[in-house]
Image 1 (cartoon, rainbow, N blue to C red):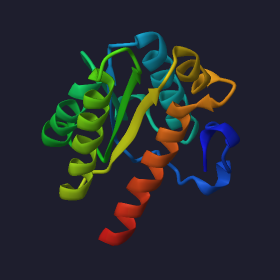
Image 2: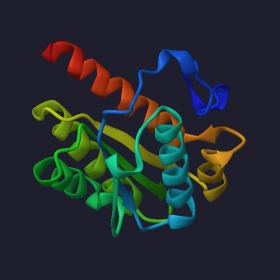
Image 3: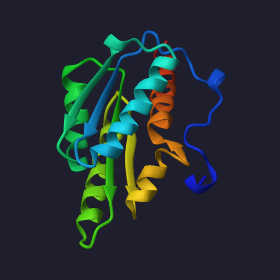
Length: 164
């Protein structure tokens, strides 16, 4: 469903598993940190609301959204996390740079999901304007970070259910 018709922070609380035993890696782009910082805050608050412990939420920054794939891969390789949330924000400018960064980050995250055993949650906001990004980072459309946290919890639960 299009974001224009859905608040990213609205969900059925009771449909989300307990996150008490789950370990999360969050890789956050420093670029547009006024947006990504709000997304990070939303994700962390939502994880904690569902039982995640502070010591089980690991946060690292990377310079930009293109580097999210490398950051996520490093979490998977070296930190024993159950899921990684990749948070970034790319706002369209006057050059094709937007297209290359978005395509590279999207393909990288998709490849990690297709070839790995740890879910990587796509928290990359790609907007035409800064106002659209603000709307999705705690503004009128809620916080994409909340949605990413719920997705991470549910994907860990999904993976664990198949390992039993």
